[in-house]
Image (cartoon, rainbow, N blue to C red; front, top):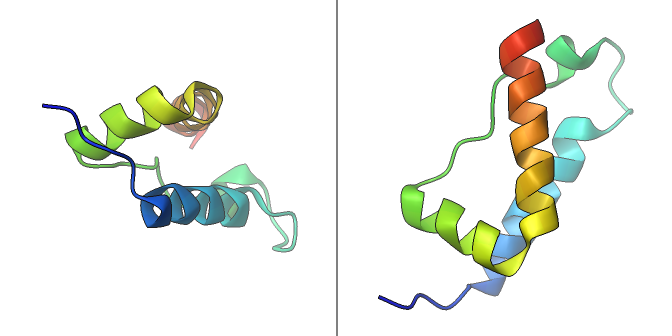
Length: 69
């Protein structure tokens, strides 16, 4: 099944990523990021298909959170 990306999904992902990594909130990474970013399987597949670099950034952030927080 071929799923076309929805612009709102991509924008929501980017906003959530920027907000979670924002330096506006005092504290360390574990204070700012409250948990790994999780998506429905079809959303994850779409992110990987449309923006591989962002998918890798999210994976790195999730790995860091899982190992440090």
